[in-house]
Length: 158
Image 1 (cartoon, rainbow, N blue to C red):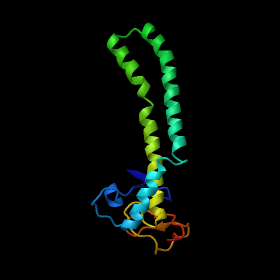
Image 2 (cartoon, rainbow, N blue to C red; image 1 turned 135 degrees about the horizontal axis):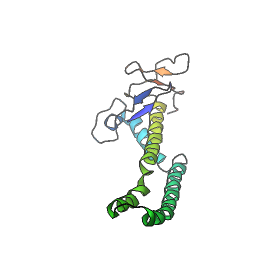
Image 3 (cartoon, one colour; image 1 turned 90 degrees about the vertical axis):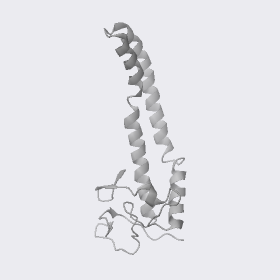
Image 4 (cartoon, rainbow, N blue to C red; image 1 turned 120 degrees about the horizontal axis):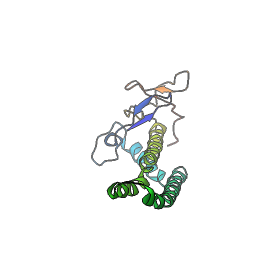
């Protein structure tokens, strides 16, 4: 699972075991911060940021399916193919847009989870605390453990 850090470099997102989403897993991130991250990530599923994307995916799938219904009727009659190939085509073409659309959705959620971790002042790649590290000239705080660069905001009011 990769994300893009704030300098545009592709880095690995911290694994779920270290993020603390699985019970009993050790994590470099304290339990209270993990609880906030997980709670915010779960509320992200129903947020205004995610639902329009999901609606767009469903709309694209419906439009693709409707277009395929119209085209497949003509295809079944005119294509000089064996029945097995026609059947496989009619069954598989409607699901062709599904993998790239799901990749797009998952990628956007991963990037938001990385931002949630960084907002808690931890590196989204390794979980190293970034709160006491000074930012570079471009505003990014570079993790001394893994080298990922993140724009860490002001400390949260807690």
